[in-house]
Figure: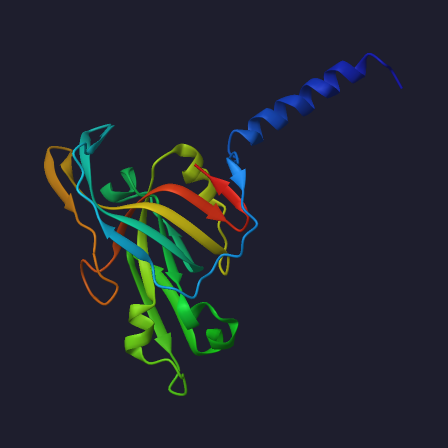
Length: 213
């Protein structure tokens, strides 16, 4: 083999490696403790004195934290968006469950889906978990990643993966293409219908044992 080919081949491999690594999240650490999905999300009141301002093409948004929030659960559905104005700050919605809904024993009774920024669930008549339980142990989370690295990490999430997300529930207001826009978070896990989803500004994400910030 012509040895002069080796530098060229190495250069091509390096170029491909650099290209693909740009789309891969970088781990900030590892945590091998068990992700406990049995408990409810932890929410505490929070008053922000410094809202987060995000400038985008054709507009800007002011993001105001209203509660600290930590959610440990299992992802049952993921949907990405690109066409609505909301996608300028939140590309991904994650439907997450906890409690008995995260137990494989009950998976056969309940199914989840998402579309148009909503999430839906169906349960069989013989399900031991009723509507009230499913409603209060699942949520559709409009994810606003605090960093690009977190955004890349959340794009890799698959159904049935256990995650731990930390950050803030937030309200948003701003302008887009000359119009005023609003987007507010739910502050309870027991509501349903329009406005019942969590608008979640994520500052730290754990997927399995991998931690991202």
